[in-house]
Length: 191
Ligand SMILES: [Zn+2]
Image (cartoon, rainbow, N blue to C red; front, side, top):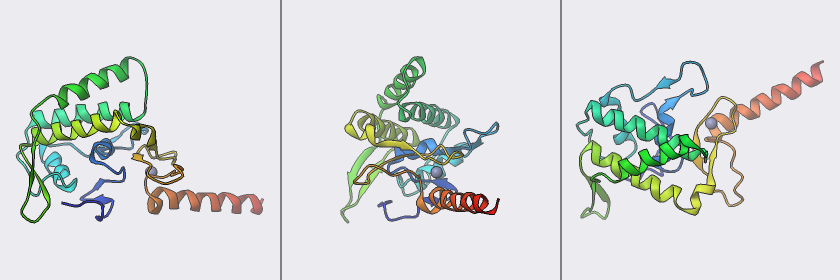
C-alpha cells in the first residue's frame, strides 16, 4: 500500500515522520507533560497502528507480548532518534538490534506490482526494527529532527532541499506557531 499520498493523521495516529520507524515514536503523545497519552494501550491498538502504517492490509492477531515489544522498540527508537549518547543510548541500541534479529515478515511482490508483507504482528515489528537499523545506520540519521513546537516531541526526516524543515506538520504545529507569533506581535503593539 502506498502511504505517501495518504493524510498524515490516520485512525487517531500521527504519520508525520516520513517513515514508519520514526512514526512509531509518535504513539506516545504529550511526552513532556506529567501524563503522556499512550496510544498503544491494548494489543488491538497495535494491530490498528500496523494497518494505519500500511504495513498490512488487515488487522493481524496481536498478543500482549507483541504490544510489549512494540513499546520497548518505540522507546528505543525515540532515544536513538534524539541522537543521545551514554547508557540510555547503549541500551536502546541493544533493544533495537535484539528486535531486528528476529524473524521478519517476508516481502512479496504482488501481481499488480505492489508489495505485501507476509507475516505475524511480531514479524512486522522485526521488519520495522530493520527499517530503523538501516535508517539510523545511514546518512539520513543526520536528517532526523524534532518538531520545534515547545509542546510537540514528534520526530521526522527532513527531506527538504535546504534541510531547514522545522515542524512535524505545517498545517498543525507550523500553523499554530504562526498564529502564536502573530498574537505575540499584536500584544507588543497593544502595550
Ligand atoms: Zn509538531
